[in-house]
Image (cartoon, rainbow, N blue to C red; front, side):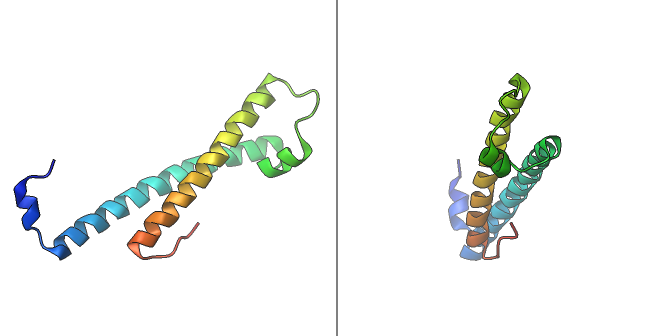
Length: 101
């Protein structure tokens, strides 16, 4: 909780605090996005295709439990990647610079 002395900060001081917070949050999101993309790349390497391609052709009829579990996890990572990209776009818009994707 903020104490009353925080109320005495100038607008430029508040702007700096917010910008630093955004920059730190952006770095955290970018770090997580890198990890998520590494996980996705591992599945793409393992299965020799993107998730979109796998969804188009489907799992083989003889796919085992591991393939089904991988598929569920892969979908989860893809979803998290989309969430992170969206959040980064929001943060970049607030900070006033373009999204590098």
